[in-house]
Image (cartoon, rainbow, N blue to C red):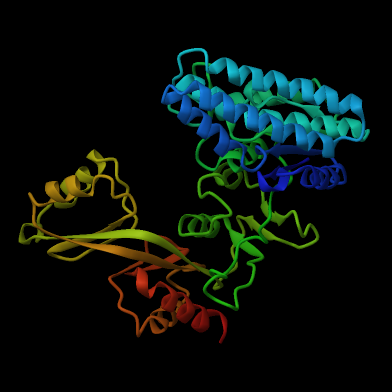
Length: 438
C-alpha cells in the first residue's frame, strides 16, 4: 500500500477534487492524506483573529461568507441531490460549530479546534464524492490515531498501534482517507503537527503502515536544481538522497519541509514528489540511495544576519564557545552557519527577534559586529571529502563575488556561502553555469 498526500491547491476547487479522485481511484490500495481546500486555513486564522480581539460580529460575517463559498463548490462537485444535500448538511453542522465558538470564551484550545475544520471538511467532501462515483473508500479521522507525546513530538508507537486497529476493522477497503496536519496532544485536546503539516502526516502514516512509497502531490514539478525565477536553465531533479532533500528544503526549496520526511527516512520508505497537473511526469524520488560524486542542486536562503565576536580571551581558552552558544540558547535562537578562528567566531541566524539582546550579551566576551541583509547560497550533492575537486569548482564559480563566510565539512551533502542579498542572483547564476552547464 502507498500513501498519497494532496495539498490545498490540489483540492482547491470542485474540478481539482474530481481530478484527485481519478488519481487515487486508479492507484490501487492507497492511504490518502488531504489538506484543507486552498484559502480555507487562512480564513480560519482570520476568524481566530477576530475572536481574540472580541469581535464576534466580524467573525460570524467571515464564517457565513466561507459557508457560501463551500456551498458553491458542492453545486459543481456532486451530480446528485442526495450526496449534495448530505454533504451540505454536514458542512452546515461544521459552520454552526464555528458560529458557536463566537458565543464563548476563546483561547488556544478553541483556536486549534477552529483550525482543524478545514481538513475535516475537505476529507468529508472527497469521501462523499468517491461514494457518489461508486468508488469504495473509508474515512478515518486523524483525531482517532494521530497523537503527540508529552514533549510535543508525534507518539510513533501510539500512531502505529491505533492506525493498525482502525485499518484492521476495515481490511477490505481499497482507499483510506484522512486529514493531514491535525492531531490530538498528550492531553486529548485537538492540536496540529505544525512543522510540515500534511506532509508530516503522510510521512508518519507511511512509516506506521510500512508503505511501499509515500507520494507528495502538489502543483510544482518536484524539486529543481536552481531557482527558476533567476536561472533560465533550471531543470527538475529526478533523484535525491533524504539528506540532500533536507538540505534543499531548509535552504529555500519550498516544496517540502525539512523535518517532515524524517519518519520515512528512518523507515527506509521512498518519498516521491509529483505534480497533480502533470501526473505522468516522473517527479522527484527521495530515498536512502546515494548518487556518488553527483552535485544535485543550488539553493538560497534569504534574510540572514551574520554576527562576529572577536576576543583575545578566546585564544587557547576552553569554555569560550560554550558561553557563546549559551547566549543563543537563552534567547531561543538557532544558528545556521558557524566558522571559527583562533581569536574569533562568526555565526549566521535567520531569526532576529532577539538580535539586540544577543549582541548585548555577546559584548561581555568580545568585540561584536553585525552584518544585515545577507543570504546563504548552498551547493547540495554528494560532498564526501574524498570526492576530490567539487569544492574547487564551487569556489571557482564564486571568484568574483564577495563571500562573508564559507561552511564545508559539517555535512556530507552541503557547501554553503554567505553573501550579501544583492549578490544572490549573481551567485546562483555563476554556480549554475559552473556546476551544471559545463
